[in-house]
Image 1: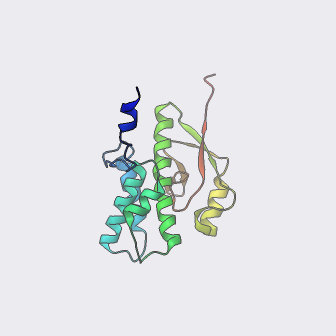
Image 2: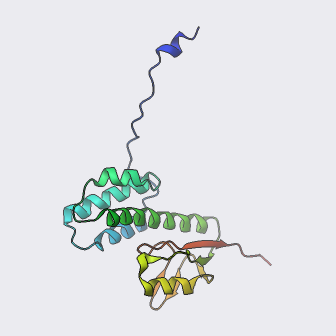
Image 3: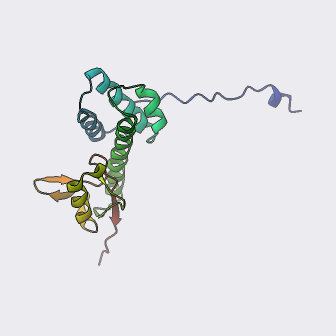
Length: 172
């Protein structure tokens, strides 16, 4: 009665092909990720391109660091810490941009900056102090937090682990 079940082949465990036409890979995400890779000192154009493509594939797959590591392959210009930090930054930046877009589509226009305890921004004391001072302040999701002459967003700076907490405003 269940002969068909016994003869059925097991499904392949190979990961599906990852398309770089994923809706997660908006122009803003691509530009931010390319900028992040370009800030790594000493990389050849070939290494930069390979790491950028690996980041795109990792983001398209939902921020999968395994995909980043497999696609990027070895890179002797980076220590394992630098390599991991780069991959994590790329996935975090893309996730932050996607979250911001989702909140704006849902009609949420304001967020509160939440500093991550335990440090932020790779231990840079100036940036860490700035991000700590922003904690609890509200900002426009469309424009970001104005700092000097630029606008910044949580988790979109190098090694930033801060978060944007949505603010639901009353209609009253």
